[in-house]
Amino acid sequence: MLASAPKWTVRGALFLTLGGFAAFYLYTWLSTMRGGPQRAQAPTALQSGIGFVTNFFDTLGIGSFATMTSFYKL
Image 1 (cartoon, one colour):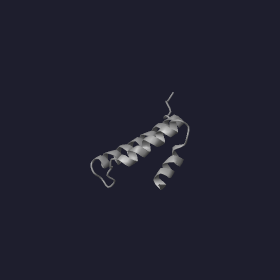
Image 2 (cartoon, helix red, strand yellow; image 1 turned 180 degrees about the vertical axis):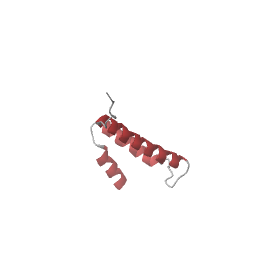
Image 3 (cartoon, helix red, strand yellow; image 1 turned 90 degrees about the vertical axis):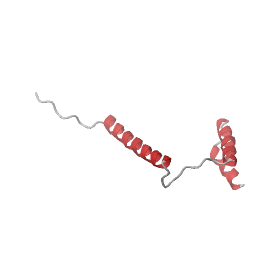
Image 4 (cartoon, helix red, strand yellow; image 1 turned 120 degrees about the vertical axis):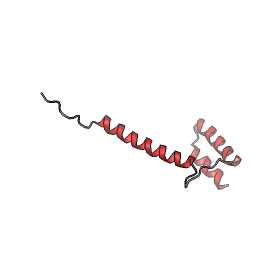
């Protein structure tokens, strides 16, 4: 009997999609590290403080979107 060619499975399609996302992420990350068009910048002290407070409130169950939005409005 001849063996048939393997057919695409959902698992294979998911692995292929995951590999595509990983390749895109790796390309974007490496181009940023080399000083590409979108150079990453370190957050300021104010942004770090806002992030700390909003993450703390998010741990307590208060959503971080509302607190971050109100902080940045001020």
